[in-house]
Structure formats: structure tokens, C-alpha cells
Amino acid sequence: MDQLEPTLLIVPLLAVLAPLLARGLGRWVRVPIVVFELLLGIILGPSILGWAQPDEFIATLSQYGLAMLFFMAGSEIEFAVFRGRTGRNAVVGWILSLVAGVAVGWLLAPGEGAVIIGVALCSTALGTILPILRDAGELRTPFGRATGAVGAVGEFGPLIAISIFLGGRDPDISTIVLILYGAIAALAIWLAFKLPRGAMHRFVNATLHTSGQFAIRVVLLILAALIAVSIVLDLDMLLGAFTAGVVWRLIMRDADEADRKAVESKVEAVAFGFLVPVFFVYTGVTFNLEALLEQPVLFLLLPVVLVLLLVVRGLPSMLAAPEGATRPERVSLALLGATALPIIVAVTAIGVDEKILSTANAALLVGGGMLSVLLFPLLAMTIRGERKALLREPVEDDQA
Image (cartoon, rainbow, N blue to C red):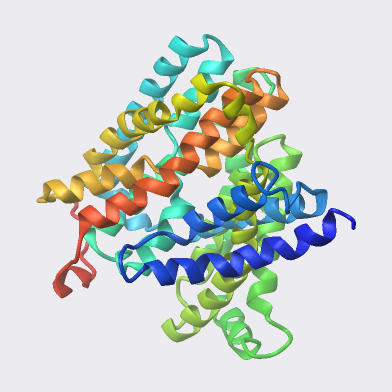
């Protein structure tokens, strides 16, 4: 039987099993769905059972899933938080993380390898932790806003660093290209502000329950257009996907709440019901567990990568904690800030392609990122514990 056939069936099967397992264990412990998606992919992939195999078609769907993950992250950005203390501290914390990450990377692999390690260690998987916060009812709380700010900077900042330092061009030229992309993105944002939203929102509402589905088509157009621009400029496609999410949020900002929620539910269905699970399951399927097992020293270093993520990214993330935050809240914020995977997957792939990073070292970093996704959100939400109903109410970010 052709390898595509079982893999094409197994990937959606695992995507269905993941939430069932998460719900089943939810009576005793809250485990993020992504944990099961990754683990099931590893178990049924070549590393263990070998039922699912890497395939070009599934790999393409996985890339769409990664792009959609960053689109959703961009669409969830709360811009108001960056005008206050929380946003400023989140930026300062990420700069500290980048400096510390590159310093650690230089000790391990002087040269371009240090940049790859530094970018990997200073990243935060905003697209991964947002669904966890949403499911826990935390998105609009001060804790959720602070986590969102940390995640936004920890996802957007590394994309900028990748575009400048790892694009295969001179950093000065890369900066000019990035400025050009910024101008194009600014134009897209300006158009989002100037768009006659009343007429568009009415058309979106009129097609919500028809075959037209105008909102979803516009989302895919914006996503494709900005990804195409980033690829033409030889920038990472995830930068375009993230910007597309920001543009879409601005377009829909004045829509009626009921219409906006209806559109958001459809976009989330496409993202988290289809494409994003494919990315996480396929990440598990393609994870090179054998490379780690062949070098026991690397396998034993996985906990070290976890500690480095927590120290390099987690501790500076605590700077963005809301005023008056308790110690458990600060620890939870550090753990969520240190949760990383998509950027690590992207930057290590660049390192391997450019012969800067070995396959084994890439597997070590990706393995550490996978463990952070498996463990840190679970620990964070356990430490966070049950919240009073009052904490569910939205609280404006301080402007101090």
C-alpha cells in the first residue's frame, strides 16, 4: 500500500483522538490537547510504530497549519496592552532573553549557530498557549493579557531576528528589506483602517450561513497575499502569516459582537479543527527521536534545554506580570513564557538547511521545545489553580 494512504488516514484520526484523550484525563488533570497531538504523532510515526510516514502532501498541509497558527496568534493581539507597563516590560524582557540566548548559544556553538540557538531560546509559542488560555477563560484577565503580551513579543521578535540574521543576506541589506516589508505591512494596516467596513460587514453577515463564506475567503486571501510578499522578499513566511492576523483583527474590530464571534468561530474551526492539528501531529511524526537515542548524551541533555528555556525566556517574562501579581501567577507566567516550539521548528530547519546546525542538535532543540509544550502549560495552569469569578472580568491594562 502506498505510504500516503495510511498516513492520510492516521493524521486526522490522531487529531480526533487528541481532544478525546484530553477530555478523558481532564477529570483528574488538565492536559493541553497539543500534548496528545505531539505524543500520538511520535508514537505512530517512524520513531516507534512506523504506521505514519513523512509525506510531501501532509508536509504541505502542515506548513499551512503552521501559517494558520501564526495567523491566529496575530489576530489575538491586544494592542492596548502595549501602551502600558505590561507591554513595555514584555519588550524589555524579550530583549534580555535574546541577549542571554545568544550568549548561551555562543558558549555552545560560536558563530551563526549561536544566533540560531539564541533565537530558539528566546521564543514563546503564543499560538500554542492562546488556546490553553481561551479554554481556561483567562484571555481577558490581567494574567491572560500579560501572557498575551509576553507571547506576542516572544513570537514576533524572533521572526524579526530570523529575517535579519538568518536570511542568507548581509544584515544591512536584510534590514532594508525588512523595512520595505514593514512599509507594505503598514500599507495593508492603513487599508484595513480605511476599508468601508459597514458594507463589508453586512456582506460578511449575509454570507455567514451560505456557500459564499466571504469572511473565510477574505482571511485566506489576506493570509496568502502577505505570505507571498514575505516569500518574494526572501523573509520567513511566518512573518507574513502573523501580520495577516493583525490586519484581519483590524478589519473586524468594528463589527457587531455577534457577527464577530460568528466569524471568529468559523476561522477557529478552520485553524484548530483542521490545519493546526495537522501541524502538531506531523511535527510528532517527523520528530527525529532516533537521532537522540543514537547519542545518549544528547537525550540526557533534554532537561538542560528545558532549564535553559525557563532561565533564558521564562525568568525575563516575569517582568510583565500585572501589578500586585502573586508568586504563583509570576511562576505561571514564567512557565508559559518559556513554552516554545513553532519558532524552534522553523529556526532549526533553517540551521539544518544552511549546514549551520547538525540534525542531532536540531532534534535536541526541537525535543526540548516539545517537552516545554508538554510540561510547562500543564504546570503553569496547575500552579495558577482555580480562580475566583471576579478574576474572569476584563480589567484595563495599567498605564503606569
